[in-house]
Length: 479
Ligand SMILES: Cc1cc2nc3c(=O)[nH]c(=O)nc-3n(C[C@H](O)[C@H](O)[C@H](O)COP(=O)(O)OP(=O)(O)OC[C@H]3O[C@@H](n4cnc5c(N)ncnc54)[C@H](O)[C@@H]3O)c2cc1C
Image (cartoon, rainbow, N blue to C red; front, side, top):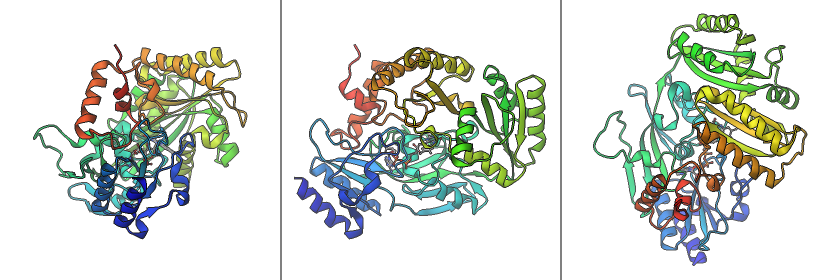
């Protein structure tokens, strides 16, 4: 069966349309190197028709389809699982050749793009017609539109512009039966029934292969300023946030938390310039933008924050190079690139006023479960209440938290997140990583609905089996 499938696909895709897994290299392993899998073939279709051929052949031969864009996902969703319970083989479908920007319409503020376009590619195409794609995060040069849609990616500008769902006006996807769902209407309003395109946003490739999208563009803003401020502590971040949002309504774009341990590592390992001499445990990196100059806004914000004792010192980037240095520092914060130390990882969101309590709670769990050397490395999208938190055995290179300690910390911190009214996956999805942790967050009703949606669109579990929230719904009854 497998040989017949491989032969059929090679024939249908042509010599440039597939790779032997032995030659496929890094696409078989996820970004964090936590998951790997070997498909029977790596398919590289460059047309929607070729995607359909792959899907149909896999359905006929009872093989799974795992779709991969830039492979920057952080939850293990983009690589095959080798030992699927039913022993099925997988085909890894790369969208990287579906990389054409089909149109950019400055009048309509839209771009129609193929799913394998990178975020940066669309950003540049929008900028060329004086528009902006507001979707943005550190992996912009590699992450694709299809991957962003499948993970409902968030990023740096969610506070002002919303997550990926908010930017998608239309989706085209290949379904399990090989038909094409054409939801590419570039309309901001269409109340003709269920909004089916929404099903594919955040579905982690479990309902179909997204092949094209219409993305909403924003006006390009001529003026922006980035500030970096040493905080006197975490306790007043909610007040600081309220001040920043109300001082120039709509002007605040990003409001990010940066820890001193991240600054120290970025300076040490990457040679990034330390933004200010004043040392603090926590820093705020924020960006204001507008169609008019925002310098006055930034000055008023910082003076008010300093007067109230929330900020000890601050710098505002004066040149493009200084601003680039600040955002490079932010992009490079995930400790995987800075510190070779591994432990428990969280992509948590809690209401913003619970952030200080959350951080203190994780520190208490880490010290109690892992000992006094343990470190809680937190950073991220403070304005969204979304912190990326790593509990590490120490800041020493080569540190590894024992698996039983990872499990114990994870269970306690997940419980803390739920107690605070939060979620254990703010923007990275479920993939394979969070499967065993979902039952504490969702009710039986939610699992039943997830299962029903999956069964309606993909009754044979063709797409990305063993991943995503509905995978647990297949096997779990909570009562
Ligand atoms: C340095 C760095 C910074 C990051 N920062 C952020 C951040 O701030 N916010 C954030 O949300 N994420 C962030 N991420 C995570 C990642 O970039 C996003 O999840 C991104 O959306 C993944 O896109 P991708 O093309 O790499 O998808 P992949 O990793 O290839 O796939 C991710 C999931 O999407 C599915 N998929 C991919 N393409 C398609 C398609 N065409 N149709 C159907 N399913 C598909 C895959 O099957 C998989 O389940 C970061 C990652 C890195 C490495």
